[in-house]
Amino acid sequence: MTVALAVRKGMRAHGVTSKILGVSPAIAHLRDEILAIGRAGFRSLLIQGESGVGKELVAEALRLASGRAGAASEVFDCPAVPEDHLESELFGTARGAFPGAVDKAGVLERADGGTVFFDEIGAMRRDHQAKVLRAIEGKAFRRVGGSAPITVDVVVIAAAHQDLAALAARDGFRHDLFYRLTHDGLLVIPPLRERPEDVAVLVRHFATRAGTRVDPAAHDALTNCAWPGNVRQLLSVLRIAQRLGSGVLTNDAVEMALRRFGSTPPTPAPSCSPPLAPLPHVGDFQAVTIRAQRRALVHAFETSGGNKTAAGILLGFHRSPNDVADGAPTTEARRNLALRKFRYWTARLGLSAALTRASHVSHGPVTEGPAER
Image 1 (cartoon, rainbow, N blue to C red):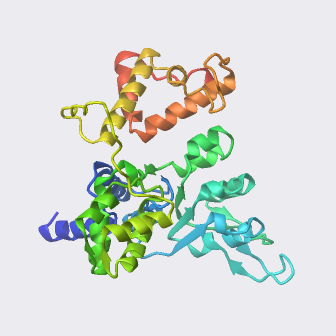
Image 2: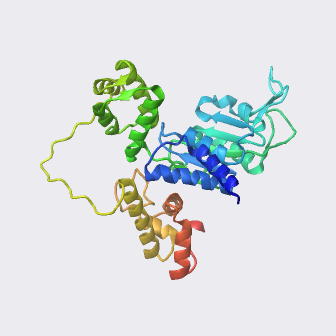
Image 3: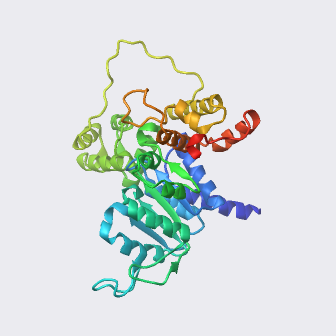
């Protein structure tokens, strides 16, 4: 590779993720994942994260990284489309399909050769999910009222604020569609409260863009908030505070803006306990939590002799949120639930390949357990 080509590729990579702001390890990892997925290529992918974390921004970065940046792009806002119009909006209509119907291309047809972004796909009705699955897998569909199949080549990116694996375990989402959407990856965007170091970066970015000065006290109040509405709420508070502070982000203006959202700036709680000594060399809280989760999964996997279902039961994955005691019988449905959750968490924490290698070394082939019969 020539120096000039390397420079151009580096500039393109930076441009793809340049709008995803943050210095936390989680956001740095997310940017790396987007670029790696783009290099490898993908056909379908799922983004999960709370409302306001920036799923649309990540979807756009993935579209740019996919190599289809100059191709057609369509957004299908699942909650915004009336249920009785979903098929016609997605697949299009043929003349005469119903009174007043004309030949009209739907979202999938208009996006041929490009990308479709299904926003909040968890809100889609199950019977509609089945039709979307068939269209994605078969790469073909018929317009409403039409007879000729239409073949398309589209990359599908979906987003949801719910945990779709858990929703599927409760029969609130189709398992087959979940596995199709995650065929090439599952990106989870952590909420802002789990990466407080990114708040300062976002405040500085938005303030610089607006030409606003931020008082130190206001900066502290902003960085100490939990932000249940994530980046979207932060931006709204900054805009309101800017108006209230006559162009300057003062502490009083920030407090008034937060109260409009039913929030108040955090105040230190009195404590009679001595401060905890810092843990040496463990990194940030999220990294510590992830390491603990990975250790728990690996330990359960090894203890169960490489049986994923048994490992899931050891971790309590077979219990539903309605279980009030641990003594419930382990039925076939519960074993299925344990296996599905174990698969989900190993994939989410990047352990699937590592567990397979470890199993061949110490246990022999990986087994799924009785849930796979």
